Amino acid sequence: MIILQRAHPRLIVAAAAALLAAALLGGCVYRMDIQQGNYLEGKTVDKLEVGMTRTQVRYLLGTPMVPEPFDRDRWDYLYYFQRGHNKPAQRHLVVFFKDDKVTRFERDNVPQSAPQAPEQGAPIEKFPKI
Image 1 (cartoon, rainbow, N blue to C red):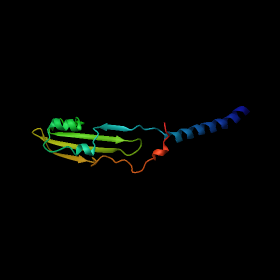
Image 2 (image 1 turned 90 degrees about the vertical axis):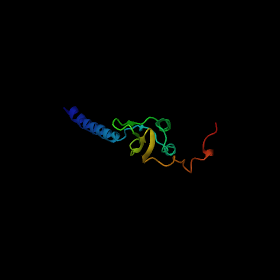
Image 3 (image 1 turned 45 degrees about the vertical axis):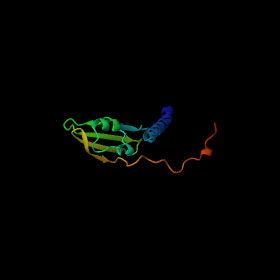
């Protein structure tokens, strides 16, 4: 009986430590990057012009992500990217056709230009010579 009384507090402490460790490590879950849809870059979308044919648009931007079953004259290009636990980036481009030619297009959250490299980086002398 004395052995059980001494082991009992150790068991409680071990169980509490295990629960604490599980609670602390539960927030350290790795979330992989999620990328879906057509990657829409500003310089590519800037090449899109009114009057282009469907074939030219498909060559430039790829196959539309969401085919419209009821409106064959509308192509939707969607892009979704979420890095880990960060807020996702979403882009949307809608291309409208009439007589198989682009009449207009709407861009939502598509950058005007490609992202620029940072001005400062690690100096080249910092890297080891091979």
